[in-house]
Image (cartoon, rainbow, N blue to C red; front, top):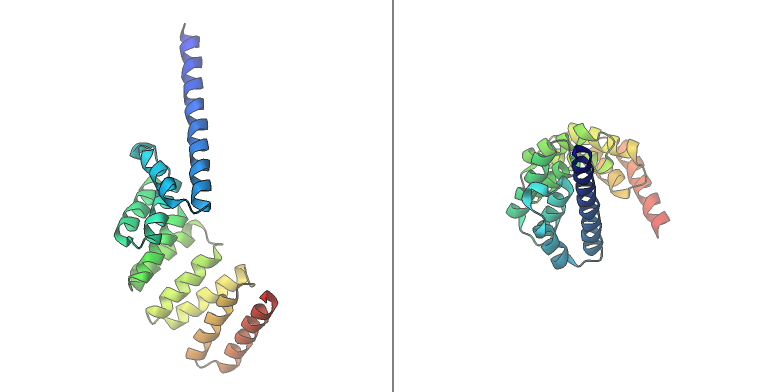
Length: 189
């Protein structure tokens, strides 16, 4: 009898996991197809205690897209509460702080994102942008270098490094990175 109860319990939890995975896939498809309202409604149908960090993040993204920044912050913080190492939530939280002109708070979140994913090129890039906004030009320079080391095919990385080097009176180096920027832009045409 105990074996039957154990088997039924295992099957029940396996079925719930499959259902949750299918629901999350369906939500992601709706979001990708820009059916935002239906995706959000489905996310809300998931009980709070069963929401994954990804669910909270997606809810935050939807709210941020609707310019409901305080609500998005709430959702990103829930994602972080569910998984402190969820770098995407820290990154998105940093992005909101940049929109709100709070570069020091953004720096804190971007650093956390990079702590959990040090090879995240856009994390380094946005951290560099936050440093620029906070007037920490030398720190910005190193973050732009890091972003380029990870992915040297993003034009904006080179442009912002060129801008930063120019602010540091390193005209020759700035010109070099501006040339890289122009080459990438030409290839993309």
